[in-house]
Length: 607
Image (cartoon, rainbow, N blue to C red):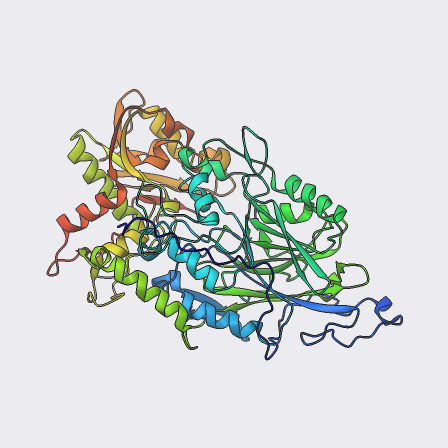
């Protein structure tokens, strides 16, 4: 939907430093075990200015506001994607509606009041897998919103590479889209904030494709930020998106640039790491330091945090869409804050870093941090409302079109999800239109970005599925590809769900109607898929027979740790996956006869 040719307006001058608004301090919780300042602070130093209003004493509190995995969710996300769980004092839990850039802006602006030393940072995946309002315009609306939000710095995430390094460079530097041109009468200006990509190298030059680090400075206070994404990005992004790029080890990269910052006299350092962990509770305010530091969190970030140099004072993380505020001991055994603010703008983290002007370092015994809900009971930020209205007007002719009808919420949660079954069935039906010999379809759960909700998201009415809602579910524009596999290869694909790179964190494929098997979680590795149980339309899989399989282009290329899917033959490339879903919904539902949520009973799970 490009508009006119570029109109070359003078670009506004980039921000370098900012004085943020002042009013009342927000108190954070989740302090480290010892919240007192070092005893040496008493030696001839004034404590005046230790809080947000001061600045002339030895110690200066620096506010770090952070969030991650926004994924272009400018409007409030719907269904379970728009709620957070809060544990109550009596141990019960309640859910709270959360998210929306209009509310996030209000919360952050309020949190900054009274804090003259305030930084806003992000942990990657600001864009990519975005709802139609942003995704339709190659995420220009989200970058514009983040500029208005006064984001200071972010790391790249894996989704920043969905459209390749050149498109990421355009989001950073500006300019209209190379094929679709300008969407408005003004040239896209790009991000006011730096994207950091310390461990993403150009294979030809061996150098980072974007800045590896950035230093925030304010009246003698200096805080350095190093940004990395997960080393495994090539395994979860299309091959075209990471072509010509090398992704290096997160720990080695952070440690390398921490030394470089130290040589430059920057001793207070925060790592922005687009990799995360899995807390033992889904409640955002769960104490993951109970019973001991970091005991309640597992996953890649735990190992990363334990090995990143003690020169780094805090880690802002992401990727897993989880919420946690933990302390994990650094290699010297000293507790260090590790945080993540869920996803989709539902939470933000408020961390207090106590800067020691005498040493230039953070007094880590005084670090405090807590996650806060982006509730929807505050006034909407008017500038964000205007931004949403402007882009919504451009998107409406496409987004508001009805493509189907549902009788209730179709969720994406669980090992096998109702929505996963629906999408797999849609791809099987589409595959049969391309080749009647298509036998089955496989769908990766990570490609399903939101549920289909019964309640109307706009003026379309309850039960109506709009194109915008379908886009939010499947925003990647992957094609539906057909390939031939032997029965032995098909069995191997199913075993790769729970073995190899997927053994520690299984990726259970969503399967089309007719394919059934048993997943025995009491076993380990590939044995968790019970080979003798695998059936297609009730018949055992013949290892020597050929099966025609539909999957999206990401999976067909071996993505998500399924190398065997890349070995298929006789490939036929079809239309995009959203088209397949649209055709299926249109053909199989009406206002009088909506689609019911599938039963999600194709995989028998033994626990």
